[in-house]
Image (cartoon, rainbow, N blue to C red; front, top):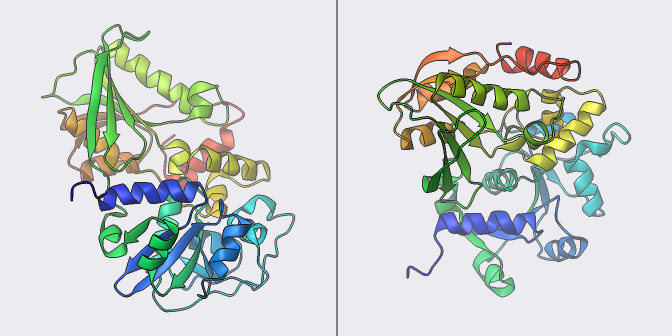
Length: 363
């Protein structure tokens, strides 16, 4: 029946459940597991999950495992055996590095080696997509379908879910309207909505850029702190305004405003990273201690939106060569990289130096 939710819709439901602390069930062939995000799991639900009879493990990323001096035995995930007396606070301390310097010894942590890690890897992916700390409790169960039906939990067929976990959702334009701006009275804002229930993304069109010529374009990731309240810890706000000003001066351009805050980890995790930076870690080290990679953004989204707007060639405003490579890899020819070196100040000197040294930005 068409009333039944698709696997994409079920994944959106699962992300929302994890954010609220509700477990979800993954089924694969004859096996099944219950997954719960460490950040949002309550004591009562932890007790119920322990009562299911399986061996609970806490899935964390190899980045976080390295910080905790725990063996991952995998390039994708580390599976930490849950001690018998471990409570939610213990799990959250393993997931969250906020008190690592005050209490560095979380273990010794015993991790699993070998065996199937599919459910643990999927759990990490879903936590990241839900903008939570990448740590999840995983409990194997005998009859996942019956368990999900009994407690009204979202159930995912992993064979259907796994192939699309790392794909970019199709984007559909919802609406566009004329929008006069300070940099140009000839502006238009396009709203794009992904089919997987994720964040909407925006395209700001300046003037009437020709579709048969390279367009001056900027892929700008949302930065609440820099774009809105004028943070001096980054150069995002000046880059946003500088890109729009240059497009206005040239009379045409497209700025893509992508809702991928904090390099794709979300504002809450970005603030966690800022707190770690106050402890002396640089921006890359802070991300790693949280369990994330240097950059979790999906630049394929930008390529998709430009193509939907009818562009095939771009003059890309960026200091990041990886954006150029990603555009080229996804069918957009970058005819020129246009530097955007603005916003340097005493508060972000270290941040910019790290971007140059560790992320390859050309500053």
